[in-house]
Amino acid sequence: METNYDFVIVGGGTSGLVVAARLTENPNTSVLVVEAGTEHTSDPRIRTPAFWLSVLGSPDFDWDYKSVPQEGLDGKVIPLSQGKLVGGSSAINGLAFVANSKAAVDAWAGFGNPGWDWDTLGPYYKKFHTLAPPSSKTADHLRLSYMGEACRGCEGPIQASFPEETRDPLPAAWVDTIGSLGFPASGDPFSGKFSGGYINALSVDPVSRTRSDAATAYLEPAQSRPNIHIVTGALAERIIFDTTGHIPEAVGVQIRKDDVVATLKARKEVILAAGVFGSPKLLELSGIGNRDLLEKLNISVIVANANVGENLQDHPVSSVSFEVEEGVKTLDALTRQDPEAMGAAMQEYMTNKSGPFAVGNFTGSLLPVPDFVGPDGKSTLKQAVRETTASGLNPIAGAFTPYHTSFVQSLLADPTEGAGNIFMYAACANVNPASVGADIIVKDALPANFITICAALLYPLSRGSSHITSSNPADKPTIDPRYLQHPLDLEVQARLLRYAETIVRTEPLSKFIKPGGRRNSGAPADLSNLDVAKRYSKLSALSCWHPTSTCAMLPLERGGVVDSYLRVHGVQGLRIVDSSIIPLATRGNTQTTVYAVAERAADLIRQEYGNA
Image (cartoon, rainbow, N blue to C red; front, side, top):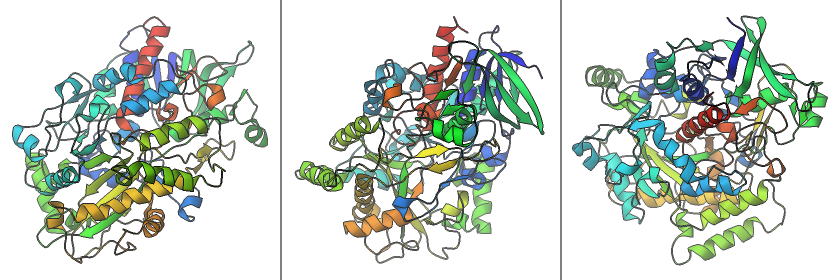
C-alpha cells in the first residue's frame, strides 16, 4: 500500500464514496479511502431490500452504538445503528427516499452559511439519483399523481423506484385516509415544498429490485480507475498535524489494520466522512475539541473548540400497533418466520423480483401538527409554547439555541410544512427491543395480524452530544441524544402520536382495523388523552437512526465546527463531508441530504484545487 495521496478520506460510507468517486474523475487526482468495516456488496442480506432489519446490530455490518440512559425517556437506553461496511449506512438503511424541506435548507443559509440555500443545494438532490417512473397501473394504485417531472432525477448514479405493488390495499387506503382528513399530497416532495400523505420512493434499482447504495452506484463504476484506492478493516486512530506554522495543518492519518499501525499522508487534504459519531470522535482523539475534556484524557490540544460533538439531533419515533380484520395480509407471518409465508415470499422475489422482499418502508406522510392547524390552531400552539417555556429555563443550552428555537417555532406555525412524519408498516411493533434490528418487530404475535402507525418528530429542539471518554481509538463514544428532554418536543410528539387514533377511525383505513382488536404490548387502549399520549410516547420511543449535526456547519460563535466550505475551524487541510455537518435535523430520512451534501462537497473541493 502506498502512503502518499492527494486526498485521504476517512470513511467508505455514503458521503466518502461519493466524494472519492467524484474527485477521481480527474485522472491526475489520487484518493485513498480508509474504511473500518469490510466489503459486503454482494451479500444477499444487503442487496435484498426487505432484509435490512436482519443486519442491524450485527458487528459485521453495524457499529451498534447505544445511547446513555435517556432522562427524557425515564432512563431508557436507545440502540443506534450506523453502517460499518463499504457503503456505510446507505447499505443497511430502510431505503426510504425522502427529500428535505426548502424551508429547512434555506435556514442553513440563514444560520450563517452562505451558499447553502435551496436554490444552491436543490440541484444536487437531482444530480445524485435517477428515479424510475412507475407504470401507469402502479401510479394509479399508489396515488402517485403528485410526481413532478421537473423534480425527478434522471441521470444520477443512485437508482430509485416505487414498489410495483398493486395488490395490497393498505398503502392506497393510507393515502386516501390522510387525504380525507385534510392532508392530501400538496406536490412533489423533491420540490422542497410538500405536506400530506403519500407513498415515498425507495433506493431500489427498478430492474434488479436490489438495494442501490453508495458502494454499487459510486464505488463500483469508479473502482477500475488507477487513482482510487480503498483499504478496509482499517481503524483511523488520529489525524496527523503539522504544527510548525501559524495554523495547524492536517497532513495525514494514523490507521491500525491487522494490529499494524501505519501513517498515510495527504498532499492536499484529509477529508472526514466517518459519520455523525465517528467524525467528532476522530477530531477529539486528534486534539480538536473541548479543552477540558482533552486535557482530562491527556490529549494534546491542537484547537480548543467546545462545539465538537455537540448539537446532536435525531428523530425520535413512537409507535402503536392495531390489530387488523381477519384476512388482511400483513408482514406478521414473515416476522414469525412462518415457513409457508417465507417460502412464498422468497419464491416471488427470486422469480419475479416482487413481493414483500422487494420493498422497504414506503407508506408515510409529512404533516403539520394537526392540533396546530385550523381555527384554534394558532392559539393552541401559543399555549403549548407558553406552557413549555413557563419556567424561563431552556433545558437545551448553547450558542445555537436561539437560532434553532426561532426556526422550529416558525415551522410549527406553518400549516404547509411537515413537522412530523406519520407513517405505517404492516406488522406488530416491539417498542422495547432487547437490541436494535429485527427486534423492533414482534415475532410471536400469534395468530393476529397488525398495522403499526409511527410518529416521528422531525425538528426536535432537544440537542445532545457524542464525546470520547478515553484516548483509546477502539473505544466507542458516549452518546446522549437527550430525546424529548425539551418539554415542547414531548408536547409535539404526543400530539402527533395520538393522531393515530383519528387515522384508524377514518375511512377507508378504518375498514381494515378490527373493532376492539388487540394492540402492541404496553400500548394504552386509547391515546386520545394528551397526558396518556405523553407517557406512552416516552415508553415507546426509539430512534429513526437519522442523527446529524455533531460537527455542525455554522459560524464558530454560533456553535460551529466547520465553515460554509466544510473546512474545520482553526486548522488547514481538513474538511468534513458527512451527516455530522448538517446543522439542522432533516425533514425525514437523511440519506438523500447526505448524498446531496457530498456531491456539493466534491464540487467545492474541485473548485478550490482547480478540478482537484
